[in-house]
Image (cartoon, rainbow, N blue to C red; front, side):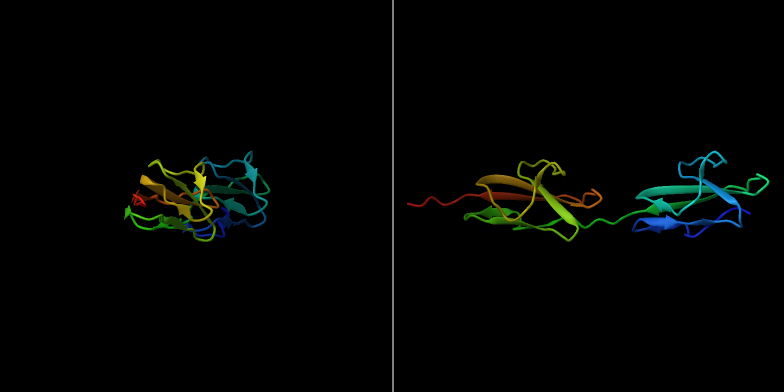
Length: 166
């Protein structure tokens, strides 16, 4: 008989493990889309399914060395990411020094740029409110989770013109 899988095929929002069982037979499996043979990985412990699409193919081999039919299941691990970051104040023209803030949910880091380029993990790390620069600024912010996944980018267009004091 072919091996049995502990997890139903489908899409999951967190990393999963799948266990394979067989009636006293050895189990061999692949995760690279090829059909397994006895020269592939012998199953000894649950298989960790990482983010993305995971196709697990497995066979049982009885004591006489006769393999079962190949069984294949596909699992999609799709860890959700937060929405684009909340940035305040809103786009606009200001005549006094303002502080730009980014709301950073737990488990995320925020990065920003002030030059209309898209922020990445190599951009400036947000550690607290930023003084709005004078003149026109295109402020861009992104959130990055612990797995390195980025959210959509929030852009704000600020114009700060401080009034001259006489």
